[in-house]
Image 1 (spheres, rainbow, N blue to C red):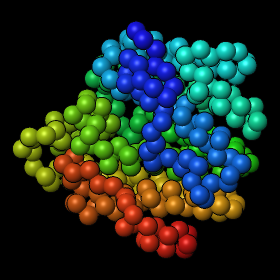
Image 2 (image 1 turned 120 degrees about the vertical axis):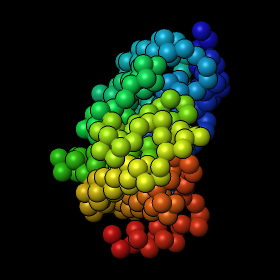
Image 3 (image 1 turned 180 degrees about the horizontal axis):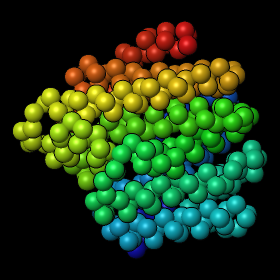
Length: 290
């Protein structure tokens, strides 16, 4: 199996030069933190691509993620990283310069490994508690790393960061139902489906299931995500300066996605909503009054 190389493509068709909904080097981000934030993003983005992109088998993906973890450890020991130097060079510099916790980086790799195993094994999450344990590996480490960059480390801030990050992850799941389900990535909790008389197959293209049951499932999941986001939102008052304003917009962006899902009567299994430039005035107004 050919290795995935930074900035190019290999067995997984992965590239670390594309960006999504991540606060990378935006104009609100303090300039001295932009290289570290970009390094964390590149690390997570490429690991995600290894786990998800291309046509490699599950065993090949897990082997590549294991090699990725090995190079992370090597980079942190200031040793060569021959396969992914453009990822691990800047990342090691950020870890050492800002005192970042390497365990959080390992948690992210563990989340991607779990994704591979669960997709290959057709795993179904039993309930929201199990899904939140996944978020603790896949999303919460990013928030904690950013807090460390911002110099915010008190326990209440960490708890609120976890709530925001888990909410963002869940919002992304419910936003992407129409994308994830056809790819056998199932995050719908089994207990919520049972409560509303629904099953995973009801959300697949071509299903003739009654909308009432599907609406109820997505509405409950979105309400839970909104509540979690609102619990974590006071964190914006613990993060000073431009970083705090960036966080306000991140929180409001997640809530705005939920607004748009509600606007389509929670039919996100049929239509993917997004936040665009037209939403910016609303986001700014709501951020101002947080």
